[in-house]
Image (cartoon, rainbow, N blue to C red):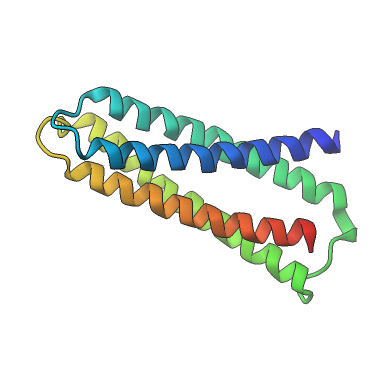
Length: 148
């Protein structure tokens, strides 16, 4: 069971990172297209759904991992405990920022801005870069927690 919980945790993180990278690259390349169709917006919207499923799995499996170790976890006065606290704060920050990003994708999907301008692509490109950077920092803390 422990293996399955950890596998879900790692798999979910790979979905988050890989998807954010793909969305960034897609937005970046689409800026050079003379005509942007709504399929790009559907792709972004689809990633937002995948993101929220993956972040939910990450939180659930993270709680499962913490529950597995229980009282054996070092407290906050240790370096390990402080890394864990920082990681959890970063995950909350990622989630709050993602709420804004998802809201922007939703609002863009309601408006018909796709045919008028590519400025929304620049906004989304920045959102996905920020997501990638935050995920990289979280991943760095996660690796530090798992491997010392």
